[in-house]
Length: 211
Image (cartoon, rainbow, N blue to C red; front, side, top):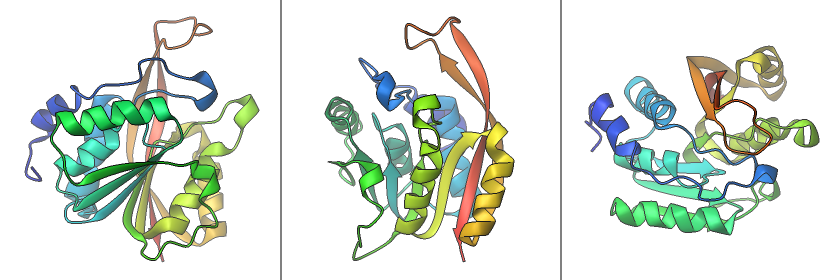
């Protein structure tokens, strides 16, 4: 389905099941279908980084990005997720789309930093936790691990407010970093402490290219 039109692609992703009981400690929010569709469509049409590629989805949750990458022609997709409940939903989504080129493994992304894989992944995708006061900096830890596991490129969503910090880290890590899209992340009321029904957060889609 690599030649899918964007509108049809988003319609497919709208049917991906999300978290049944999201866990606040894991900052579980499903990537909205409009964000995921534009993100993945941009990655494929502008950079050809999905079709026929080996793709890793870090912190894959219920599988929105994994499903989307497979629909756009990825050769194989591996999702990594720590939460067993999310993995069950992920498996259901894969079965629902009848995808035989997608796998999910239960693993703590933060424990992958020192793992030496025999083969690197062509493309790494992630919508990392943005980081709460108790979990500050986790987004950059995800990014650092993604870069270690990528052979070619990493795509990651981050708050626009962190743009200057990410630019500095990219220079420090000696990777080419480019904001390829500016998006509005509609965060629905998910947890009891949320006071509004939804809130829009400005996010950047970054492409990090290994030199």
